[in-house]
Image (cartoon, one colour):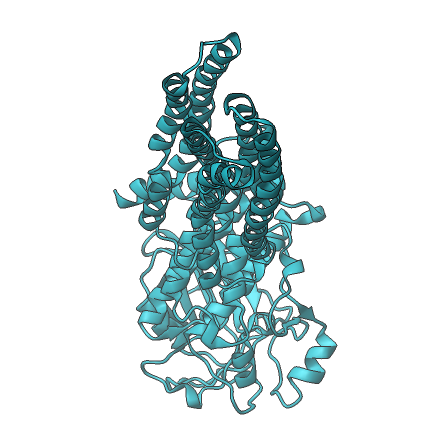
Amino acid sequence: MSTLPERLQDGTVPISKPPAWAAGGDDPVPQQFGEFEIVSKLGEGAFGQVFLARQASLDRNVALKVMRGEVGGSEGQLLAGLEHDHIVKVFSAFADPDSGVRGLCLQYVPGADLGVIIRRVFAGGRAPESGRALLDALDAVRRGEPAFDPAALRDREGLAADDYAQAVCRLGGRLAEALAFAHARGVLHCDIKPGNILLTPYGRPMLADFNVAFDRTRHAPGGQLYGGTLAYMAPEYRTAVTGKPGGAADERCDIYSLGVVLHEMATGARPQVITAAQTAETLLPDAPTLVGRPDEPAVHGGISLEQLAGVPRELVAVIRRCLDPDPARRYQTAGELVTALAGAWHLLAARRSLPRPSRVGRWVSARAALALVSAGVLPHVVASVAQIGYNTVEVELVGPQQQAFKFLVVAYNLLVYPIGLGIGVVLIRRLARGLARLGELSGAEVDALRGRARRFAWQVAALGAFGWLPGGLIFPLGIDLLAGPLRWQGYAHFAVSFTLAGVIGVVFSYLAVQYVVFRAVLPRLGNPDAHAPARTAAEVRAMTAAFGPLVVLACGVPLLGAVLLLTLEDRALTLGFRLLVVMLIGLGVAGVGLAERVVRRLRELAAVWLAEGKERAS
């Protein structure tokens, strides 16, 4: 642990001559400190050594932290007021008159420190897939046997069920809760790192080692000589450590340090480390003598997205904000970080709950932009082909009128399709560009992109209506003007055919676009900082409100077309006409089946978000 000497505020004085074993010498460690019988050595740091001991008076195992050099009650006083499930408890301070040693009696936490577990999880360069990897590593390296704790057993079961990113969110959230508790009492930890986080055999994280912490409610930080581990220090805190102007220490420094831990848990490595030589040259030219190992690399500036390749975007967004070099852009409180990590966990859980994609679903997810174009255009193309064939057969046109009709078909489609496609491409490009830059967007920008995705299907439907509805009037008027008067039945046929084909194109393009949005777009656009399941459920409910009426339209429109055909036909019912009526009825039946199938799939996708909102509300 690389730390700088702490200027104690409680009036304690250093031991005049610590025993050789306490300074790392070869003398044997005493087997007894007062009522504490030493069982084994647990670890050693810059401030002293930690032993597993048996406290005779209470017949329990405890951890004895025996101080080296300057000793005092600072850490004990801080921890005594921090009774939290995820903070190691301090039971008492002790002084052994025989050896002249003083220290703290702490809660003994069986298990292992998080640094050891991270190294084992990522050993060999493999990427862990689930929280089970953390538990397997914990079981392999842990020390001690825990007492049976049914409540803590739920922590282990939760970790085992998580994927790996969720497990990082879960553990980080518990640590952020511990920080929020400490910060609410004015205590800054100042040395958060994996080595100071213990994981119990049940997978419960415990924040430990408040050696360099200080209480802002009792001590003005202006007179504090700070300490900590360089690799996990926020930039402004590192400035304060080096004694340069502009340094500061507040809650956001602990948030930065926890962000480094989250990065290390997610990737197996710290973000943007620099060498020890660079640290000595650029960061600590005037620093006091280091206590402990001076070989810890330091974090420099922000982080690069390449380091987080393969980490889900929701967790990346939280880590990036924690590690923002500007404290004003970080989470301002640990409570905000708790909320963000919980939001990221729930977004990842919702994505895991989505139905397994079919072959079409996999293609849509891999090529979202192309899928949106296809979903928006193909139903209209099919409707156009059917509508042109219908009008060619059913509308009675003489020679010049037929030529005018062919001219209008070409001119109208050459005008309407490019305009509609152009507007659609602009809308899709805006959406696609946002998706491509998703890892760089702020939470507010992600929310804006999500709103754009929610509106996209209605925008496509409006474009379709704009292309279809005027044609029912433009075609008969154009034929009238170019080639002579058209009978009223011709006007009626054009109005009916354009309306029916337009409704079919709009309905199926809307449903197809919504499928792409629900399958490939919305699951990627969660904002962990502001995720509210109830609000998300309300948004999704609004998006699904039109599904029922659209199924009715998909069924009723072709059947209505058949009825209107029979009404408008004033000639003998030829075989061709009868076949056309049968075809329309068949299209109605097929349309119902297709629309019902698409809507069923859409409701399955939407149910994930609706269920989450209901679960969180209850």
